[in-house]
Image 1 (spheres, rainbow, N blue to C red):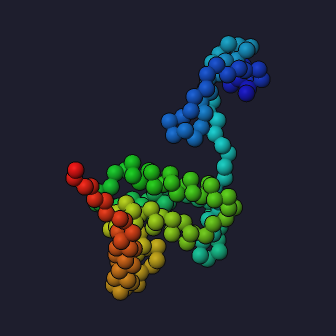
Image 2: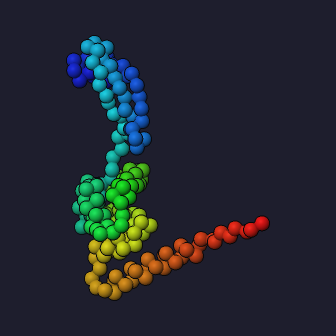
Image 3: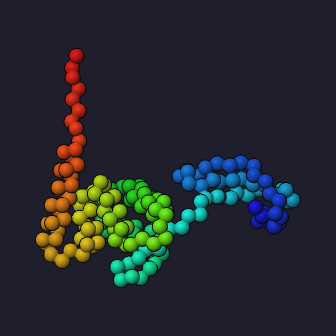
Amino acid sequence: MRCPFCQNDDTRVIDSRLTDDGDAVRRRRSCEACGERFSTVEEANLKLPFIVKSNGNREHYDEGKLARGLERAFEKRPVESSQVSQILYRIKRKLLTSGEREIEARAIGDIVMDELRDVDQVAYVRFASVYRSFQDVDAFSDEIKRLQAQTTHGRRNLKPTTKGKK
């Protein structure tokens, strides 16, 4: 690593630590020539896939755009900003680990809806209304019925626990 002060190529690592999220390593370095100390951050260089829109256009993944969509869905809902950050993080991880060079926008919408279903059902329906371009009340009603069926189905799979008294 080149020293940012004197441009010498000979530096040594004094200390290494994981960042708070564990996705990078922070290294404290010292220059052998000038003695100055500096920090570097090392992280995996993974590329996010291009997003293929319904019209065939390709664009870079824009986390800000997704965050704005989630903010609209969660507007006036009892959801912490940390929960929104976690959702964005999980979505980005799924995209990074997919190994795909391109992914359809529709697939990202499905991932988002899966995340929202577990966090807030009102936000789920709000997002679905935009994502699926609801044209009338019947489309809303159908989506709510689908959500209720999934929720009911999920509850049926849960086995009640009973604790016996001795």
